[in-house]
Image 1: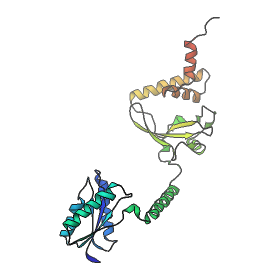
Image 2 (image 1 turned 60 degrees about the vertical axis):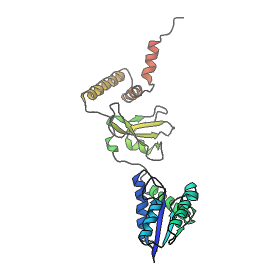
Image 3 (image 1 turned 60 degrees about the horizontal axis):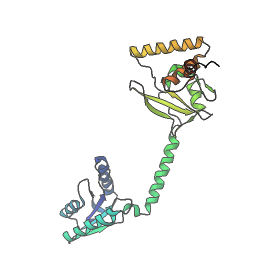
Image 4 (image 1 turned 180 degrees about the vertical axis):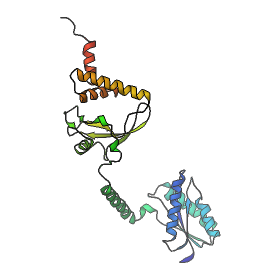
Length: 266
């Protein structure tokens, strides 16, 4: 090891302190992996220390050789002009210190192996992930099943059958965050029926505990009972009411339209 050698890892710099901290941590790992007496970090802009200040500090610490490594993926203006200009000015200022500059990170042939490693790691992670996140499914609203697809008429008796016989609408499980009218966060499960239409089931109960919520549920149940007495099934009655509540166009609105627009006498 050359006791007068110093490796300076140069990054762009960020207003986000956590991003700069990553560079400091990388320099610390390099310190125990490379044959340099010391390893430190510097930033082109937005963070400290600057490249000239880091070079000055290394020279004051006794460095006779400073190797600058640009931690950049491509050769833009910073790598092609800004950093070389700083290095040239530092050479004039510290003519008794050899200041060198390595190729930037993206120029290394090893970058392909790094990317391959990341891809393999991601594949392994995907294999380890369950195809369905079942945490919290036991809290599904009791009266949400059986669920009927309004497009093809398929009936899903349970949440287990619903998940087993449908397909996620996304690359993941199909879980999305939503909000109730009173801005309470809920989780909703979106799945595609075998016919292609999208069905939704709440994973967390929408039921509130306030007096107003209880009153609304009571009115909802009364309407379902009245519709059932008129010949509809409880499931279709609930679904029609939900369609209207969520802005859909159920059979109820169709019937109201017919009542409000009587046929003209011939």
